[in-house]
Length: 331
Ligand code: SF4
Image 1 (cartoon, protein in one colour):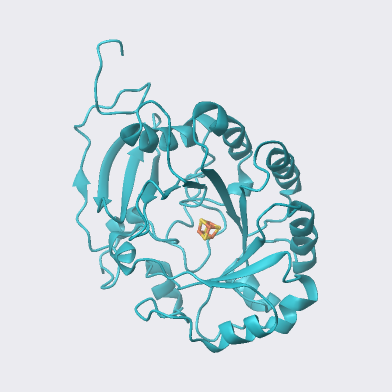
Image 2 (cartoon, rainbow, N blue to C red):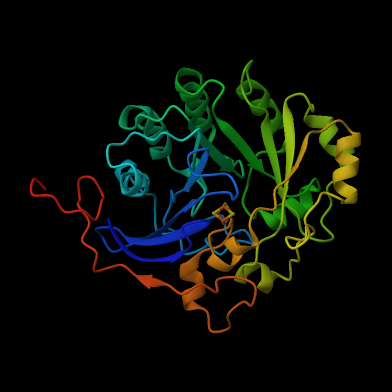
């Protein structure tokens, strides 16, 4: 893997663009959450597919599907970020989150399970907290059974599972996630098997657009508040969201949780997280649904996203074994 370009800021987030040996391109991200220092929380977000066959209408990483990354190709992204900061592979970070969420629906790639097996072996990282965010595609039952098994064996109490469902209206859900997928019954049944004593609650994520239904009474039919929490995120500035006419319900420029939907969900007994994050991440292009390569192809830039310059790092020589730019005699 050769990292060819990057954009961002050390104190917030940085996106990396890399070419794999066969010339296919991926992106991955590292971020922190100011004012929390990196020693307390560090988040890596890696790609699992080249493109994505789902093609959600708010996501710039969708479309142009060109296959799955291998276990090694996923690990190379993680290795690059870890070895840059912790060459020995010891990661003394309290919450070291690895999200399989930059480009690609992770349940389509069984290599993600192999990576989950490998992470605790490869790194000395007591704070490791892997996170799978999925739209629950139909036909991926084998992946999810494997995930449950790996979680039980290696990650009890320190695994984050998130279902991105975006609405409680099944018809609208079909438009926002345009593939065949599990119904709410299937998600609830699996989520309740997955969330065992000591585990975190399963997250139901809504990147909520204006006018899109999110009804607490529908959620209550399937998802008990003791086992599931609700996370609301803004719809980040993407080219696809603009083309699709989707406008965020959550205002990323307005701090606070004063929204009708939040109130109703809390009244229904749900723990609700309004996850706004750093607006600067939108400008960097590191946020969920964003994809810098899509921006590079665009002739009509977005005002509120992707405004950072891309730095060419292709001339940095990278050690193929430890992924640092520090070339050593032995390599
Ligand atoms: S949001 Fe996820 S599933 Fe949807 S197109 Fe983007 S990467 Fe694929």
